[in-house]
Length: 292
Image 1 (cartoon, helix red, strand yellow):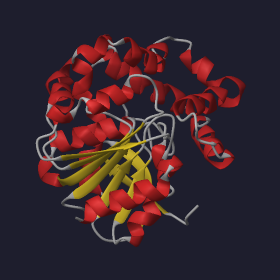
Image 2 (spheres, one colour):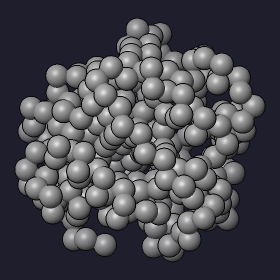
Image 3 (cartoon, one colour):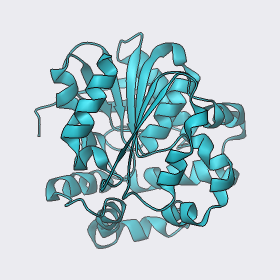
């Protein structure tokens, strides 16, 4: 793995720890679940080599980033984190890349602050507005997101942590069935989840966003904005054919939710962690898109 620089910055009331490489225009790279900033171990060197400053923070609640004082993890807050990070890292504008929850945050950053965002790249996540229509009750979509429902249970933390976080490794293997998960990556993720408070924080992303009873009423208007706004900046979006059920269908039907151009790339045989499964191909396309 590359010899990344590390740093800390205060943004949106949280002490964010990040890894970075390179100098130039900022590319903010946001990770998802169950993961950490090192999911961009291949992308950051490619971006740095192309003349960018690539920064990947550990998301809120993912140690060594701190937990928010109010212990809130609703998706609109992730978007607000992203906007605040652009400023905290000293940039007027940024490109934003996101995977999984990081992709939802990326769509949200563009919706909240399009004047701060040049372009975005999303990995393995359709526009969140796709979940507001018929797909919300689609059997395959529900099956593919079973964990979001399971994580509402009070014993979910115990299940995730059992047998030294075997759940996480098996979740990765289900989500990317043709990927030979390296032990180094599996251990890195488990090490993050062994840190105090991380499991509950990670599950609360689902509890606070998916369950209306757990949402902050004061955030209702902004939550609607990050969920339903057609993306107002150019987008490059990736998806694999071997990701979980229902997700590719949402990706294929999302075109109407983009107002400034959308390029979609579907990778046959790739699963949810396509940026790790096919890094050479994915990185080259991202660099080409950002530099165009």
